Length: 133
Image: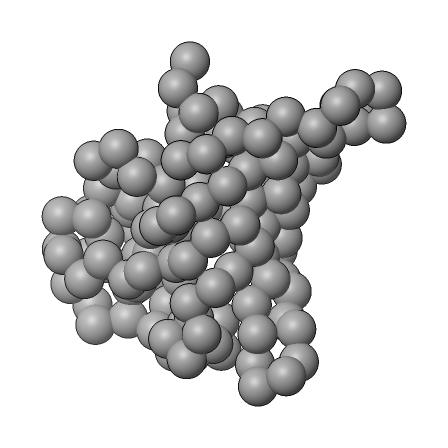
């Protein structure tokens, strides 16, 4: 399994992950659930009206953390907006429940992909495993 597939699978199995961004000099953390591979890259989804969108636009460095089955993953990198309708539609197709709130061409739906990402899977019982993607 490729690194990116392993990362996405971990996050999907965890169901909820926490995305950390920066607002000025203040860290901000919130729960997310969307994770998707599109054209070989790892994507998240949000709405342009949300603070997280404004924070990522001002400073695209972010980190994700999730825990499942005694292991945790930290995914760090730069989140870059992909403004193509195809990328937004692919995310909405992967998460049909979002389609009641978002549409690929609604002017609000926004997807970001990780660039220069590093994931670390850790536990109290084994050494950390580092996955570059």
